[in-house]
Image (tube, rainbow over all chains, first blue to last red; front, side, top):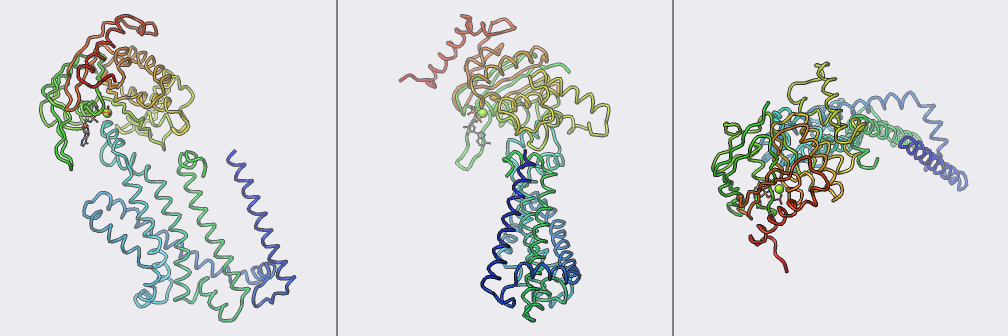
Length: 257
Length: 265
Ligand SMILES: Nc1ncnc2c1ncn2[C@@H]1O[C@H](COP(=O)(O)OP(=O)(O)OP(=O)(O)O)[C@@H](O)[C@H]1O
Ligand SMILES: [Mg+2]
C-alpha cells in the first residue's frame, strides 16, 4: 500500500515537473525571450550533455566537500551530544554557549578560514562541517534528553546498567530526533560548501557558477543550479532512506508522513 | 526461586520539593505473605505508587525498613517484576523483542543461539496465554492499548518473578477490556504462582482479584484497613454477584466515606 502511494506520488510529481518545464519552454519560444536572459529547458538540457565532463568534475569536488563536511559533523556531533547529556558541566556551561554560537552565520567566518587554512578544499570542508554541526548536535541532545522518567524506572526495575540504559533506551529513543538533525544538516552542508566556493575556490560548482556569471553564460549557470538541485535531492533522500531502513517503527507509527 | 515474606515496618517517605517537604507516606506497617494476592486501594495522591516504588527498590524510604525474605531492600532485586500504569513498551522493538528485553539485559545475547530459540518459545507461549498469538513480530504501534498492556505483563512474567508488582496496570483501559484483563490476570496468577501486589483505584477490581485488600488513607498515606477476602478461587463472573463480594465492596466504600474521601451531595 505504502509502496503504491509512493509510486503514484512519484508519477504526479514528475508529470507536474514536466508540465512546468513545458510551460517554460513555451513562454521562451512564444515571447522570443533572448537566451542571454533566460535559456529554455532544452538549451539547458543540451548544455548539460555537451559540457557534461566539466560539470561532473566540479560536481564531484563539491560533492566530496559536502559529504566530508557532513560526515565530520556527524562524527563529532554525536559524541559531543553524548558528552553534553551525561556531563553536568557540559550541559550547563558549554551547551548554552554552543546554542549562542549557532546564531553566528557560519558563512561570515569564511574569510577568516581562508586566512588560516588557505584556498584549498579544506576551507570548504570546514565550513560545510561547521554549518551542519550545530543542528546535528542540538537535535541529538534534545533526542537523548527525551527519555521519560517512567522509562527510566522501567530500566531500573529491569536492573539495566548505565551503559545498557544508554544503548537500549536512550539512544533508540533519540534516533528520530537525530535523523531530523541529519536532514537539516545535510541540506545546510550543501549551502555551506557552495557559498564557501563562492568566497574562495578554484574548483567546484560554486566556482563554476562564478566563472559562468563573469562570462555572462546564463545557460551554464542554470546547469550548475540543476546539478546542485540534484545533489541536494539525492543526499537528502539518501538520509531519508537510511532513516526508513533503520527506524521501520518510526515513520509507520506516524502515519507514513 | 520461592516467593518470600515481605515485611514493611514504620515506612515513611518525604519528598523534598521546591515548594517544601511533601510527606507521601507516614508509618506504613504491614506483612505480606508469600504467594498471596494483595491489592492496595486509596484515593489519588495518597502514596500508592510511592509505596510500590519503595517495595520495588526504585526509591529509598526516608524512614523505616522494607524487608523481603528477611533481607533489606536496596535497589531493584532479581525476582521482582513491575508492571507500570503506562505500558512502557519500547516502540523500536517488536513485541517479541520487548518481551525478551529482560533476558537480553542479563547476558542472553544473540550469541547464545540455543537459549535464544528456547527463550523465543517462552515468549510465544506467554503471548498465546494472553491471547496475542501471532503478534510477536508486530511493533507496539500496531497494537491497541489493551494489547500493549498485555505485552507489558508478558515482559514482567517472563522474568518468572517471585514478586509481581502492578501499579494501576488497567487504569488506562476501557471498562470492557479492563474486565477481560482481570480474568486473564487471575488465570495467569493461577499458573505463575507468585506474590502479587496490585495497586488500583477500583474497589471492585481489588476485591475481585485479591486475597487481601489494603485501604490507604489520604496523604500522608498509611494503611487504615486490612480486609481479608474470603472468596474461593477460581473466581468468575458469578463471584461478582456473591453476597460476600458485595459486602466487601460495601465495607471498603464505608471506610472511604468515614475518611471523607467519598462524600454524597
Ligand atoms: N518524585 C516526587 N517528587 C515530589 N513529590 C512526589 C514525587 N512522587 C510523588 N510525590 C507526591 O507524593 C504523593 C503521593 O504520590 P503517589 O504517586 O504515590 O500517589 P498515588 O497514590 O500513586 O496516586 P495516583 O492514584 O493518582 O497514582 C503525591 O502528593 C505526590 O505529589
Ligand atoms: Mg500512582
